[in-house]
Amino acid sequence: MKRLLFSLLGAAALLPASGAQPSGSLPVIYITTENNQEITSKEDYVKASYYLDPNGCEGVSAFGSKDAPLDLQIRGRGNYTWTGFDKKPYRLKLGKKQKLMGMSSSKHWALLAHADDNKGFLRNAVGFQLSRLAGLPWTPGDAPVEVVLNGDYIGLYFLTETVRVDEKRVNVFDYDSAVEDYEEANPGQTLPWQDDYATGGWLVEIDNYEDPAQIEFESIDPYVPDPVMRVTYDTPSDYITDAHKEWLLKEFRQLDEMIINGDTDECAWQQKIDMTNLARFFVVNQLVFNYESFHGSCKLSRDMGADAKWNFGPVWDFGSAFQTTEDTLLFDYGLYSNHWIKALYQYPAFVKEVERVYATLMDGDYDTIYGYIDTFIDTIEEAARADKERWPQYGNENLNDRAGEVKGMLRSSVNYLNRTWHYASATDDQYTVYFIDFDNAWDDVYVFTWNPVACGEWPGTQMQRVDPSEIYADPNAAVWKYTFTESAGLPEAGHSGIIFNNGQSGVEDGNQTIDLIYEHGGIYDRGGITTGITAPDAADELPVEYYDLSGRRIDSPAASGIYIRRQGAEVRKVVVNRR
Image (cartoon, rainbow, N blue to C red):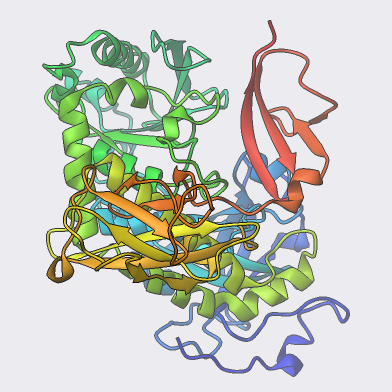
């Protein structure tokens, strides 16, 4: 992307004299509300106008201008992101469909603030890109922009396609539009009802917030602490009927029964759920360790018809991604009610499909994600500095460090999943192992293997010292790596022995490890195979704040339920059980 300097003289009339200003590195969206009124509601749109200035960025088209702005309606959006932060996210409805930032033509967009993303604004960006690489049918497009609202520079935002029923987005039958089209063509008449209409098209989400546009029931899932399953219906909504709601409740209760009490060898639920889409959705969220992915903002869609299947996705909210590294599957982390996924994982056919989807992704373009991260950081770097000046309580400093953390966490995740899902590359004959050492670390580390002897005679082959961020290890640790190749002799995962040493012999003298078991992509310390041990987080020393789901601050959870926990920049939902 070409970057041109921003004219501060040209901006002076639009921006507060003492305020932060656009960086000059990204396109800028200028929005002016009618009578400069504030945006205070998530439900009610405010009339406004806008124009998009490409600001010299290559390949970006202008829409409107300062002298000829275009019509717009704007309102708030989000749940905790709306109530918990001064930097607000917004929902946009353009007066006319436009291909903003080269994305598909639509009236409907979101400006995501990502005020809670302290990982270089990478959580959604990486999650969305992995969704595309994994082959989910549609993933929202997004592009970084800077925003000026009523003359006030409000920072770096991400213009994002909203998830909605549309032939270019979630392409299922749109009952709401069918009603409107019929009534427009037949004034005074009502669309004749067909029983198939109740079956779809649907765009819903498994939710962790109560909503009027929702069905709920008590799930029989034994793996979740909160049995109440809430399903919010996004479409149909304007013209939804009682028949729709009754069908949806019956359908989800039936799915619940089929998943929880079904014969794991028969996998009957796949008559109603597209297993491949579900596997892709799970793999993407597991890679970024989005531990709330089946807990809230878990979207599903279904076309109309008795034989249509539910599709998990599109992906949307990666707010809980890259919060931690755990060598575990996401549904085993914490107390979150990740509905159905642990029960689904008891089905061998589903696990086999997960392994196949994962292998396809790894054998395909997965490694391009690391270059994507570097390009993304380079693109937003200057705007992120301006955003930090505008919102010193949020934002990101040291973007390259944050990108290194994310890449290290991805590598750690891949190392774990390679072992868990028995992945061995079909095209690459290389496998890397890591060794971590801490206090009184060895000066040099050698790796020696048995069966076959891939690293020569004792003490083996000297390993390469690398930066701890490569596997998201404690920055005070010493980290080495070695890459095996078939041509040099490749140990057999799970059966070959591997020994790490400092060039001398003797377990008792502290010169070598015991004979360990070799695993592809393994991370080891002197005790054996381990994880990418995370750095101590200074945020652990910060006070913890709790909020209810309406965003109201509370001293501490007094009753069982779902709460929002905030500690420094880390924000997540927690389930509290009071016995």
